Length: 145
Image (cartoon, rainbow, N blue to C red; front, side):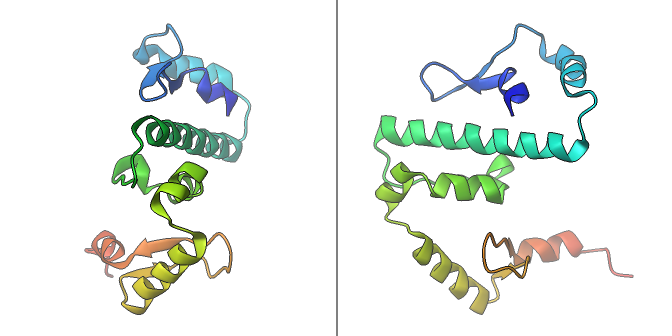
């Protein structure tokens, strides 16, 4: 995870992103290649996932503390990352502000499953992942044999 943080992190305010290197963006590919050379691809992916979770959690936590926001809503792009969203939802600042607890979220997901809006895709009892059924249907369009 440290390798990614040397390229990008939060600025001094904690509310903006800031490049942490003097390299031009076009030159980052070679630097990353050098830093990651010899590492297993799954270790790189896991490190990038952890970096993403930590960056987003720090950013959202700073925004909540700075603004006093009562609710957090984010959509699209990186905010479709389920693990990062779980990390954000578990922040004490976010829980306290929203009043959302794990049991409440779990009960809400159960209702969405009953209404066939979302489906759990892992079959596990912990660390479950859900998918929005209409999104899955859109992704499957045109793939019929």
